[in-house]
Length: 85
Image (cartoon, rainbow, N blue to C red):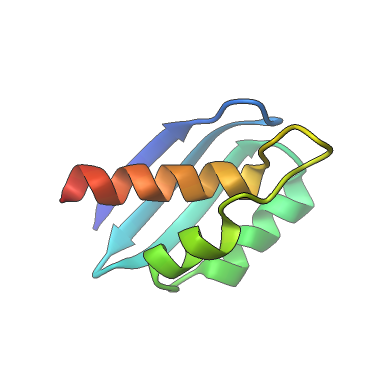
């Protein structure tokens, strides 16, 4: 499994870590942010297709910030998949 870390911007969570194996997401963890919401995101997307999750979460906004923890995860997934290509 390839493990990734991503420094977030513009959100309460400071960092996101996750693994991708066979195109599927695993062990998604947010450091900081709203613990209940970020833990729920990780549980809901465990084992899901990384590209599909990124497409689903991309553009989600939190309080008019223009981004959110979910959007930052989409950006992180996009970057990880791009780096792998």
